[in-house]
Image (cartoon, rainbow, N blue to C red; front, side):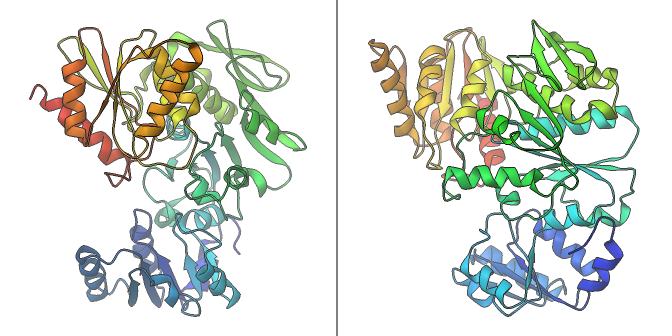
Length: 474
């Protein structure tokens, strides 16, 4: 609908329109403030939750003149068709929701905060997606770009501050770095100038209709690039490596296990980068402060995305200083020789497998379990059998994880040599971890599941765990 840098054109277009905003989440509250600031004539909020807190919130927004009307409750979307000229969809609302399709049929333009940002942004956008590692990779990319000091870096998308409201401040020489989820990409019709896919494995199958739909959503990050793609792909991941077939443009690969023709790779303790002609020795593995193979892979992806925009020293400086993102193998404390780590971000089996790979001994007390995303847990059995001495389970996926562990021991033809404890809440889980850990052990929260059985998000889950750990002994 709009081209890069056409903010004034968009502003003139939308001022006399009726705009629907679906949901009152993190990105949509700043969106509503932004729409008011640019003079939108009528704003209607549609929200599923209808508790007292939500009612008070929307009533206050009416009183303050931020919105003109609202529809809340389980039938909230029934009022959408025909009500608005422009609809801002929240990521969790599927693009094929009947009411949304009907609104489009009646002439409404359906978009999102992130799609409009990428359309109007006057500068280069780097987008990062993947099943695992996208937040760390996004953060590393933004830090390396900032370290170079050559341009202002804006960070947003699935992390950080919603950026649409900052459009008037952005300059053509700036750079925007966005973490993009499959939900944000699912119906998007614009791509970043530089796209990065860290890896793809089954995830979010409680929302996506199939694994194939999930893969297709991830691929949209580069599907709408012009004049050939500019994309970074993981050669070690069969799905992302397969994306390269038939693509034309600037394709960079990264690999932990083999040399690549163009991109970054790890070999004998060193990281290298090649532009297809010349190979550069970037740094040793020991330069990277973060633990684990997966974090080497995150740096490999980041190096591919930014190498031509920064210096090797910029990359080394960030690798040396960056201690990681909260809730990702975050060290909380040491008590009686036991170290406690919060990796609440680990919402899939693959993430927990990566977390366990950091440790070399069978000295882990693992707290796992949470809401089920309808994904398989078979592969988690082996690393738990190898590394975990006490397994503490909570939530709906507890049975799946336990079954995967026993299946692994049965396959090996030996009896299970770990203790399994079921707990009803995190206070009980942390106390059980404390009671069962001994000097030299590591207590790790790595749920392999989403947090929505007990918490609003993984941050709240991680903070709850950390709070209980800080109160030990109790």
